[in-house]
Length: 147
Image (cartoon, rainbow, N blue to C red; front, top):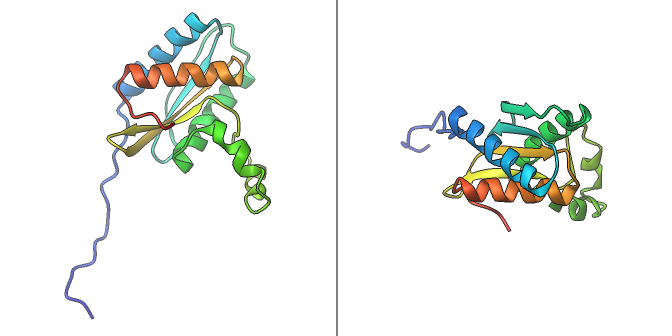
């Protein structure tokens, strides 16, 4: 038996509402410059929706896709475009059936000093456009960007 006291909790960092809204604004600016309308979702580190915006011309299905991209990147801590390689592995392929898993570019974990604080998901353009808008916005606000 050890005399070290049992730790009963951990400190969980989370993206602030102000930072989530700033990220959405940066994504919308990037999307406009790239040339598409976007739905943008930001979750906290637990995958819970923190902030959301859908432009008027974005298809309604893009809303759900954006939320699921943000959830996927927060849940696993890496970008959604990398999932296609993972689900090709028969040992991981069953995860592709998870109803929220989104293996399409445009979702990134939000990292501050290497620590996961949330996820961002963009939908409305091509997977490459969504991914590009995420990268531009995360860099503009000084968040860490996974390669």
